[in-house]
Length: 149
Image 1 (spheres, rainbow, N blue to C red):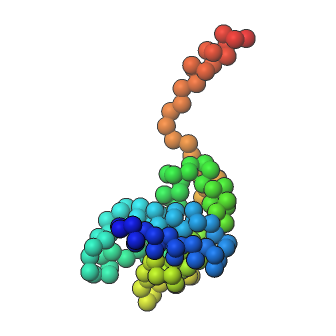
Image 2 (image 1 turned 120 degrees about the horizontal axis):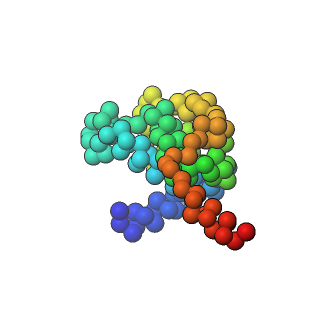
Image 3 (image 1 turned 60 degrees about the horizontal axis):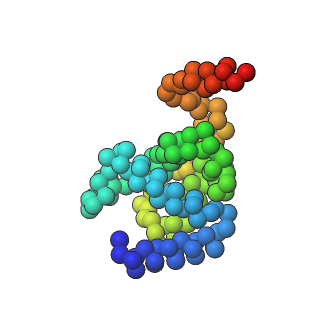
């Protein structure tokens, strides 16, 4: 992307945030990243002229956003999203449609805000279901504690 395109995109994003102050600039940037993540996970073809080969539905995007957020923010996901003004899945749709209205994203005739509404509960998905993965070796820190006591 050229410097002019980046500058134009940035200006449009600033106008979107000024027009609808509920969501932070970071929330819009995050949605762009999450769309890339989701399209990649689904094997979508960005350069295809066939809409079905590159389109991501609202449900697919919302699920991709959830997975991407968990990978990126872990146990802090819900808190980060809330800091950006996002408290429910339907608000992902509101951000997407703000981007569509500004010309920064596209949609099909069948895409609606309802595609994002009430798909999951943030508290359940980001707090209750969250599991730390991997193994943790606390022996090193425990040995330090024992030697200092």
